[in-house]
Length: 593
Image (cartoon, rainbow, N blue to C red; front, top):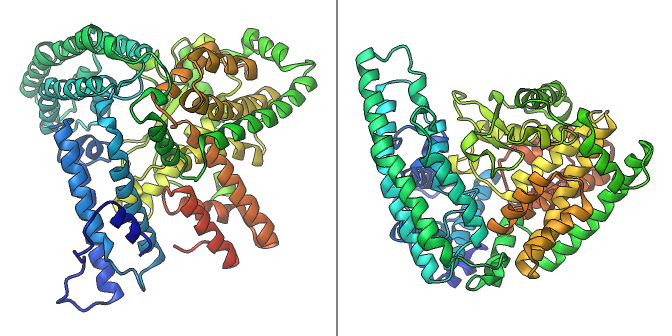
């Protein structure tokens, strides 16, 4: 196997074959053994991360949280090395193409984890987008509450929250000792999130929201007991744990945080950022190359945007952007109206999907608002996938915080990105595809998943949407937003830009509202390289589509191309390119897995 050298570089043993020698060695037996290993790995993942199990609808671990200690991280890495050892000598000769892809993906993921371990990201587990302060209530939000046992799981989890914060604080303290911390101003935003939850009344906290809607089958006696125990757990354990965490942040942690915004300020920071770039883009490009691509894409988008502005009677983008900010028709009048705009665009696209895809998702989709406790620090919208059984639908979360400040001109593009044909379609089909191991149905590669979302914004143009020139301008505004990310993310993390330089670049090259500029700037600082995957992935999807169109000529069919790139779940972009090239070489047509 081509991964052998990587195993040797990691110092791993290659002496443990997967197949038992007593069995007849055929492709069928090896495939069965392989899928058993995949299933064991998936079950290990669910047990190691109860939150993941909850998110995919597996209730077995809904009474507990993950172990967030360094010891647990190292134990999981050791488990992963065992899987690498078992895969190292496995013979894939004669196996189906998807089995070979599965081996390649799992090996790649495991090696990635091993290589990334040196940067000890577990010692920086908290920022305004990630961490227990917002992650724990989000898990409660996706837990099922069908019977008494489900509520008892909630109570057990509430009682376990002080341990979670104690473990996270220990990891953060180790990180502070090693000068491995987020920027100070990022953590000051986290304090606001913590305070918002710790100061909430019992009737307002998201942790007790399930008490407001008991199923009919739960008796009055059980309701009374559950309500008391859950409320006691909130007031006596959860709320004090949040308050202690807030004091830990303000008194101990934030004073120890770094002042420089870029990842280069971290120990081995340049190597860490290079790793994150490769992890996010799954492409072999340097930060400097990506920075230049961003500058080129910004210029291209600005040219198209200026053409629209001139058609609407404006001579430059600055004056047109200023007019958008003061145009009452392009701003929401209420939170409900903002939600309705997104619902309308998604419903319109649903009817067009058969023109673009042969395979369509079965999972339902709904549009809801971002929870109040996290809205101030969150982006414009995001998507949470539903459960494979369809009991919990996929959800597009729309941020209604300061709704009047949020322009409506890019709502159409964002609806396609987060809903259909973007995240909901892609992630739901991945969950529903038959024959793939479970770990692949839930795999995530930023360049693929977010690149597909951005590519989906453009698909609306292909089916005749964006009839309103302001919406078409909003599409380009959303696109330039992602191009700007390439510039400012690489700027701050590899070229020592200040935060103000990032904000200034946004102002100079977009009309994006101030609320989004501020929150997004902090996002790129807190989450190095994550934002690079969007534009780099979109560009690769477009490149591969046009390559297929050129080489296949009249045999090219857009829905076939889409089915090809969607029906195997998320893939690294280099592996996706190999798949598309093989399809082209075979003459195109309806793809066969």
